[in-house]
Length: 353
Image 1 (cartoon, rainbow, N blue to C red):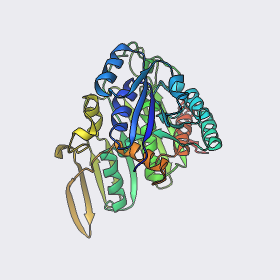
Image 2: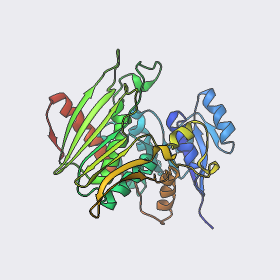
Image 3: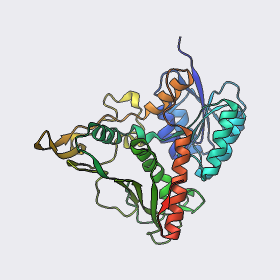
Image 4: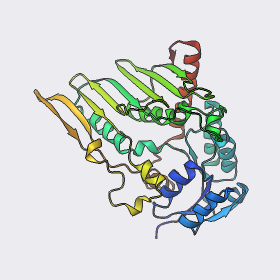
């Protein structure tokens, strides 16, 4: 009989409500046992969608519960470190929403504490399970483009005003697009290419009254490979999501992974037979020389699978798989963010150390 693992979710805002809870309950033998939430509108959603989960208003009701095996920290960025530290000290395995922490020093402290306690520590970099990212990874590994010279990844939005009454727009430490969306892109690049030799960052606040970085461009140097990561809040017309330029050809992919939209609509992965499948209109285009012949055509997208993150968490806890998202990788993502901020301030390229 498979072991049941009970999960306590701290926070039911955008992260907890849209990304964590639906994917946790989609994994057999993971039980969403407790949720800490205080807002009435969120509590009503919990009662409707997760009637078997107990609702508590104090984090300690989760941390001090001996039946809770895994604690998921889905709170504002600046609180990740303190809550994750308290959970580890309470003897829990811990999942932290991205970004891992605000500083790499905080990340190092949590990594050391997890090792001391013998507990799992991982970060919710779910965009590794995006269908478009899985497709890009497959294209690169196929060598159909020859030696890769450039990779450009965009994560764009359009909101030309400052949204009121949200911590994400208040300019607190650890907020802004670089921490929010940039952490996803940097993690994906680590999976594809490892750590860069050097980093150049250009960070801007473009919207009137903006207190946060709402536009960034990072250039990561990998010797002969140039990687550019871009995100902004003033992108009305969709730009390519991925651009791969190789010595033999090019791959271009438009459109976002479809899973977030489905989760926002309240769908569960277990309820949708073709979960994570791109419509054909969003398949990428490859144009290359293959075996001496010119070839141009569509590349069917791989299926996205956000529950794959928590399936890996479960399997790693029961000894059936290695942990996919290592805390050291998430720490390196924060280090790259720190270097990008410094690079932008000093207007120079910095070595990764």
